[in-house]
Amino acid sequence: MTLAEYRRTEDHAGHETDAGGRPHPGPAEYLRIGLALAVITSIEVGIYYLDISERLLIACLLVLSAIKFSLVVAWFMHLRFDNRLFTVMMVGGLTLAFVLFMVVLAALHAGLT
Amino acid sequence: MMWLFLASECLFFGGLIAGYLLYRGRSVTGPYPKDVYDIPFTSVSSFILIISSVCMVLALAAIQRGDERGMRVWLFATAALGITFLSGQAYEFTEFYREGLTMKTNLFGTTFFLLTGFHGAHVTVGVLILMSLFVMSLRGRITQEKSLNVELAGLYWHFVDVVWIVIFTLVYLIQQ
Image (cartoon, rainbow over the protein chains, first blue to last red):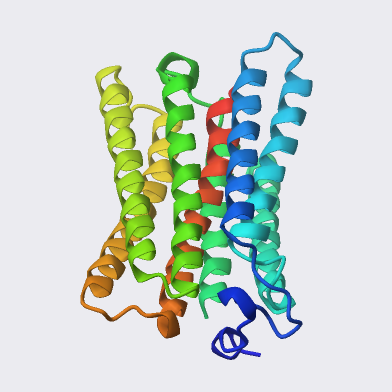
């Protein structure tokens, strides 16, 4: 199903849906997600100033960043509600980026750069 | 097509972020990240970009229910917040320059300005797209039936936001 086809499947209350009929969230839910993102960012900044071990700091920051990333991609970019093909494309891009990082890291350690 | 484009953008920014991380801590001369970063200021910039994403998704929700005026208000707010973010980035770059950090100073300067500069360029393109949509809407060319245009612009804008989420954590908060 193309994005154009998917767009034609409108649900009640004007919210768009995918072929499976899952409606997109309404403004109230978007505001809740926005609030959650703001709170998580505040926690991130707060943790940055805490006097904790570097490993714990990095672990906490990475987990919080991953949660924020997932919230935006799933709700604001509608991957949670749309065709899974779009999720595959997004994850594919991220996977390729990670592979690229590992290849460059390996090359750096091998003294090739 | 849009998702394929975003997938390629993942690879593009993945390369830039990988470059920054791989050369982190290898600068032999200062200034170093801890000398120049202003975390409270950058945190405000992050909040601004998050709020802009909320405004963007509210613009989409508005046009999907046929509320063209509501869409224009939220589109304008999104673009204004994007311009505020860019102004903050310009101020930050200027401060770094005054403290002696340029692209040529050290590895940190090269990789930092390359990564955040390209992100800023993407935000600039996003603001131009949003302003174009706003003008088109004033001329009556963005209706409920054509809400796909707003959705595609939104996907691009949210992608720019998620890239910043990664940059804020890996570049600013996790220092070495």
